[in-house]
Length: 401
Image (tube, rainbow, N blue to C red; front, top):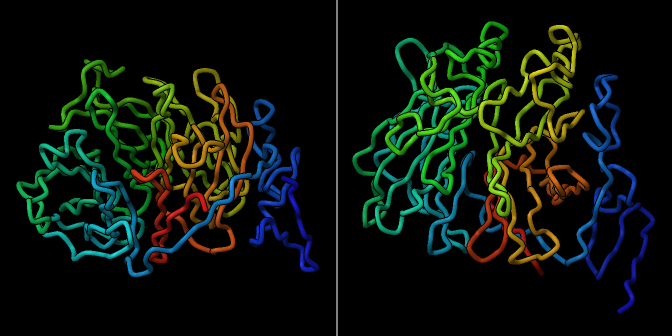
């Protein structure tokens, strides 16, 4: 069948009767990013930034299911197709597949929701159907300050309460600040729990991302009881729960559906948002190496981007898109998206689709940019569609028309 495209006078394209944004018009060889970078830093290898644009050929749509959430932060699917969602101020709610929002679930411990804090990422025990256990990260208020913590509780049969709630892990040290908590939690296939933390942003805490005595600026691997998982790279050392280090503020972690590799998305400063493939024991460089600059415009540290013993990002953005939650897609609904990484972009106000081949990004697309939403998290539903939440309180279903 012949494809018919109509170019309209105001610069959009009419494709199969639907309006396609300018970001989706990008042709092969041209990046979706058109703005000038903040720095003149050069990438370490070809394709590390501003890769050629790609465009989804399968007709798809983004449909708003509800607009009544309040600063949602984390989303994951329940076994029956509903969703369990955290809200920054401290509520956990169940939302139906049609978008009906339930009442807050009782039993959630107090959070400090100032700044970037609050109730953060959420995940279900792999054996949830049998044990009904829920795990979540949050900024916990303590006498000395706040800390990124992980709690667990059993969802009651009537779904009104989390029972026997226990804080199983705290990413010490405590700090009197309200920024860079990280806060995603996911399970690996071996039944261990991964947590991402931030370095708490301030100049004085940044060096802790490089400090193996600190839980800040790390990816943590623990058991369901909060103990260091067996086989961790720093077992027997200062903090045996550490899995990787040198991170700034990781708000996205996901496992590749084919390789099983762990990937992450982390915020850069002014420029230098990163996508990394995370390997046990590796150092990801912050704040020693970065492709970003300070918000006020000056250089960070020695202004270097490469150093022996420190990992290069698979991909980076300058200017930033502010990558938050991420998920890999298994291709069950839209085949051409199989094994693509989808990134919820806050300041970028779009869903970023990254095509990855042999651990390299080979194409980038911006979805739903016309919606002008700060996308906070994204997950795949059991129906093969993607579901994304926004800071403005919306829940989107993104799937095949």
